[in-house]
Length: 91
Image (cartoon, helix red, strand yellow):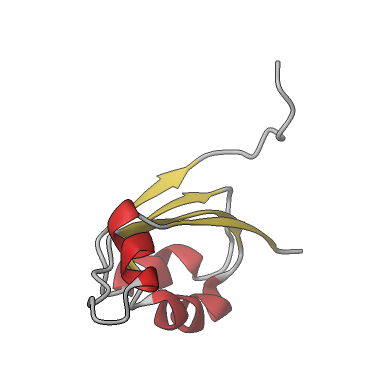
């Protein structure tokens, strides 16, 4: 079973660019994701956000497929963290 949680953040500069059609959008957002065993979807995912984000931060929760190798091959700066998903509830 795979799991994927993601968030997409736009900078103030990008929000202003959306409201002004003469401004070029400069990708400065960060794609933040928690995932496990999502290797097959990553190329398509990163292709779809290429013009909107300039970096990523991924928490891999123990993938056993090629997720880590695919992430390292993506042509975008980013950070890959490893750890167990302990849940989303507050202490």
